[in-house]
Image (cartoon, rainbow, N blue to C red):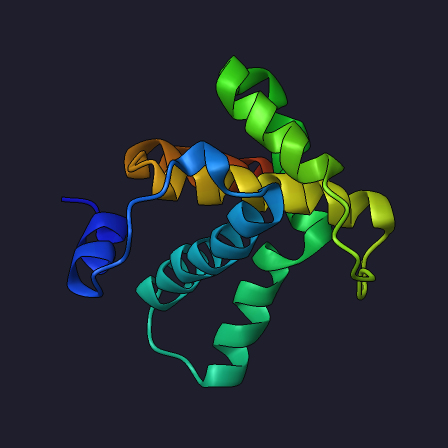
Length: 145
């Protein structure tokens, strides 16, 4: 059973068609799940002071990095995944991007919407595959600098 299903069952949440969620709702949950995955990766590399953990994880969760990830893997997405990404990217959030360009923020929102959609549809393996692929893209780019 997937984490999302366990949580829904434990808290007696109602069944909702995943496609009925707005792109911003998908991005909302995707942002949190992505952060948990990255933090899990960071602490998996060893115990360090919290400020060092935060510094390392913040490099992977900022909008510019998420934009770099999604742009590097667009060709690898299924048509359905690409559609979810575009819905998230094109959604009007009404918030102002902090420390990011509007373009980076929108692409990051699309990435987060995709992660959220994969999470709530129980596609955890695919979600982790794409997050790892995104990290590979970032790591390869930083090695070339």
